[in-house]
Image 1 (cartoon, helix red, strand yellow):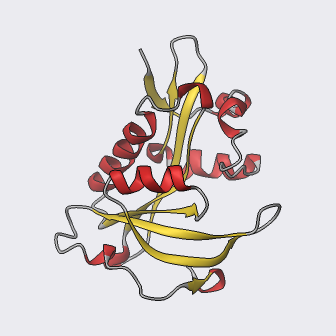
Image 2 (tube, rainbow, N blue to C red):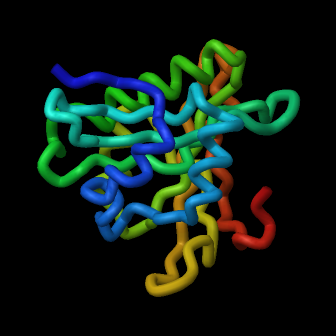
Length: 173
């Protein structure tokens, strides 16, 4: 049986099977520690009974007023464990955590070329709020979609009303 549990510092040495995916952003050690210390309830792993990490989600709560929201920083599932519903399960966990923190919505950024993830997020109720020009830089420069899903504090779904024009990455908070 799969266990969903808080990310532990020792997991940093066990999650390469998940992080090696081309669409998973890899961060420095201190970045992961920052999330563990500051947003532990948003940083969870799905662990196989054999101890292998199957997936993880890393996020945070941020913003002010009606922009108070949960943010998915990273969600990744190891190739051997895809198509089992783990990504949806972990997104549901992050959404519930954001509801408990009285967030208005949850957002995430995804590469425009990552059609599999985009379709998953749409099935989970997310919409493309805006396109962010030049968001991803490095080996694979690319735009991102800012996808959003309103929570119960936004009954009119104002956070999900798409912008009718792209924005540049330098203009994103």
